Length: 623
Image (cartoon, rainbow, N blue to C red; front, side, top):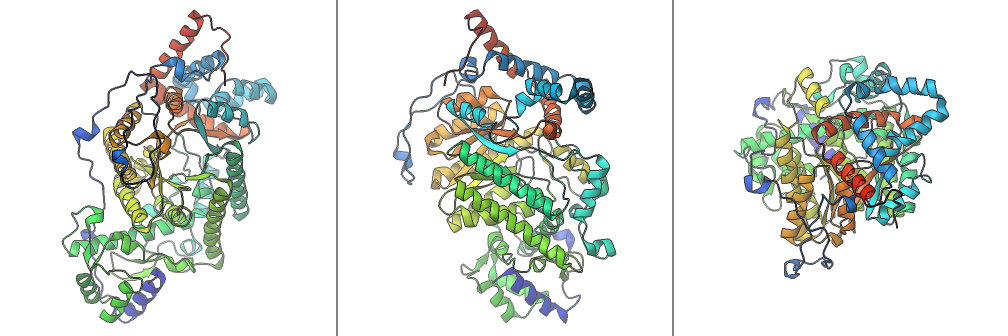
């Protein structure tokens, strides 16, 4: 039975029973992954010293893979000759210069003013030349899809693929960004009656956090202007997909949902998804199952029907139909995946936005009314997502959906999951992104893997630590809701390794899951290699990928690529002036990264000295 029909039945049942449902908000329990230390699982893996990769055979996708004997692969991340063999000496010197500049606080803090001053003093042509010799040349591949091809082809020759990312952003003032955000995240109904709707604070727009660029380092940020702008951004993504398909045989392309429509819908749909999950938690608590892990919470169907009947939600016969109309509850129990499957009808999108009010106990619309234009805007966002997925399939490109802020993310993840159910039937095309600094990361990964297992499609994930930590913490504290972020870096590391190991075990079991380990953390890469060796996972199966940003951590990317592992660089591109906001944040990110570790600069110096002493003053890569 569809969610919309379920809601309609609940509404009808409630018309004569106003006030009968009483759900205590205090009985709700957030579903949070345990972050207890698991010493055996989370120990650092010692570095390996063997420099050459031993050839391995492709494992067929069968359940008898344990019988296949694989030679273990070890990577030496200290071998500078292997790490930098694709780089000319001038490129090594540029890396050293840029990384050093990133450690100078005054340059990083005043980078925008310095950029503006340099443009005025040097003129546009000279300014662009300077940028291409330094920051732009280090972190950006080129101005358009034609100019980036030589770099992509060179990297591929050394075993490193590309995730294309058109990194152009509007250079807005803080005031302009705040105005755009408030205009696009507040509905007409909210503007007319700001306090009439029972919205949670987390899922409402707040002017002091309207500029979503604040406290964010590596992520692009889009602000809604109008539907034409969204269409233009969709076309940009389509061009990026085509460029990725034309540049390589197995590329990725990255997209952001906030570029494709009015974010009001993402806020509202996220709140709906979270409130229905909270409602499930309330029902689980009534059956004494609130302390169980999320997938172990199986509600006894007869008890559930009895509870809903007592609440006055509907007659017992009606409730019987709700849970059997689509073969739900045949096992005698209902779990979270069964519950989520009720939310599946997008014919009239505003019908999705019905929620149980945990304070009053009534089922009610999230907003009092929707305008026809708001309804159309919501549908257009879904249509744009569908268009991009179809272009990815046509061009043989895998689509990576970036993660965003937690108040948008439930909707983004659900829309991505719906794309996976359609397009990942034969191979992994759509990849969702999981941010492991979130307390609920493990629950999210395990629920989605289980759904893919039940429905038989290919699970695709990119695992990151996260890009919005400071902003998320400040917003939660200021507005007054629970901090969604793990308490410290070590907790995030444990969460990352826990999620990673779970997906690797799923790959070992079924060969239908796929994961990109997107990290600059060398210990996490070593942890992954060790687990792959233990499980007999061959790099040539193309189930486990690695990802780093262009211009960073070449000592990880290139040794992996040359040893046969699928490894990719996130490759930003775009005109010099229009990627300045991206470069500005990259400088800020590198400040912390470079101050925390001298390793990359030390390896660069080691390779330069080796070449100078070996007479390779005019070294040129051969490929």
